[in-house]
Length: 113
Length: 114
Image 1: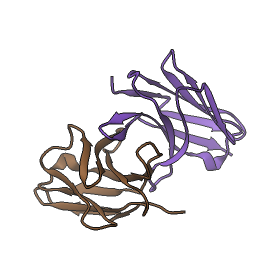
Image 2: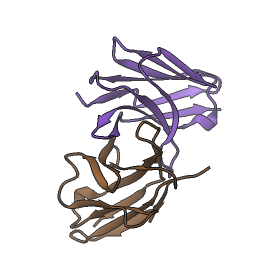
Image 3: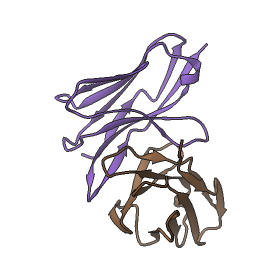
């Protein structure tokens, strides 16, 4: 069964550094999402992306965050200058159409030191 | 208005028993209610979902009951098995621009004792 792939599984970064989290959505999917989960807290929506542009973003998704689909297969989340509070599990998801279920990757655990 | 409240936080059930997890939402614009199952080290996997035009949906041992007037929905796992031990998340979805975004409950850690 096709799946969403995320790399790396664990990223450790010094505070203030830039980090790029990578996702390969399911190949025929057109809608892409990033969510995050701080340890012990709920999963939170960050951003949705369609047709090479952001459709919706949450208040968490401030100027230090950006997303990109650099080629036909990858979908990336960049955090420009990481903060301690960015430490979380980041999940990428994709759906075939906008009203279809979202399928999730296994996440990237981001640890900011 | 964007919250989804989930209970209990943790649940222990004997093998063969019924596991029940409850969720409540506030925003009447939500029109899609999925349940996700998550095993340690893995991402959430869609288990079952319901839309508000039906009051119940059953898939195998998993049933969603939906009460639109009370703005509540619940997951019932019949004949619970040790392999069902996982974290379960309810979510609610509405439109955000051209896409849907999921608003998540806090999760329920289910342990099924053999």
